Amino acid sequence: MTTNNYLIFGAGSGGLAVGFGAFGAHALKHMLSAQLLDVYHVATNYQMYHSLALILVAVLLSQHTSAKALKWSARFFLLGIILFSGSLYLLALTGVRWLGIITPIGGVSFILGWLMLTYFAISYSDSQSVNQ
Image 1 (cartoon, rainbow, N blue to C red):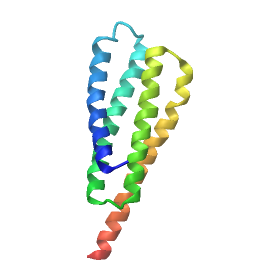
Image 2: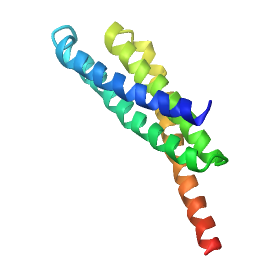
Image 3: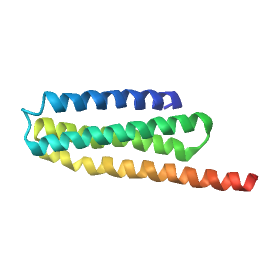
């Protein structure tokens, strides 16, 4: 995937998170139990946070095109959005409990995305101090 694709996905995903959140707050509040509505809101919140993170990584990648840690960070954030938020949306809307098995894989992907971003920041910081 290209840097621009990550930016497009992050921006589109952020917009969808707003739309899904509004849909949940208005259309679903009378259709879902309080517990499933909470699950749905967790999905929208995490989708938004990680859409913004993906946009940040895409911007960094545009300046550091060969940074493998940033590429992995973007991949993990993308995977996390799909697996974590996607499985929670499906769980909330269908009530199918086994979908909850997928959610932790998405959560681990989010953590790995943040770790890769941290690794980039540390290695970039170290390379800058060597060059000064």
